Image 1 (cartoon, one colour):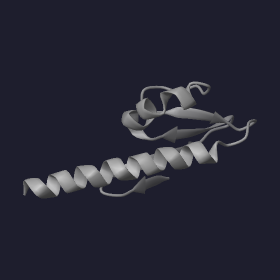
Image 2 (cartoon, one colour):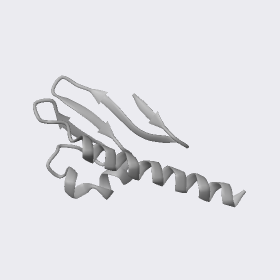
Image 3 (spheres, rainbow, N blue to C red):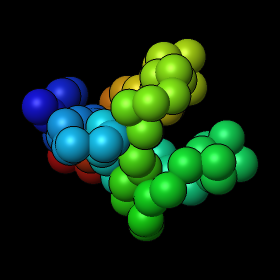
Image 4 (tube, rainbow, N blue to C red):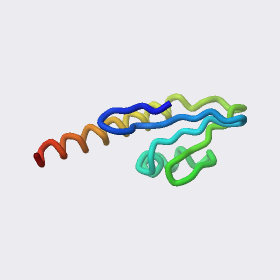
Length: 80
């Protein structure tokens, strides 16, 4: 599923051994230290199914992405 607010916020995907979480590269970069214990790439992270899901961290990333999208929308509206 994809969550949207003034554009894409985050995406999730289920795999055999992990949950893929895709908060775009800015979401990964902002929380790179906390996410360093997980496999992932430029815009993704893999949460293994055999470990507890880091709900608090996911919440912080989503909150960051909400603010980022709202700020971007406000800036765009000011230009008009």
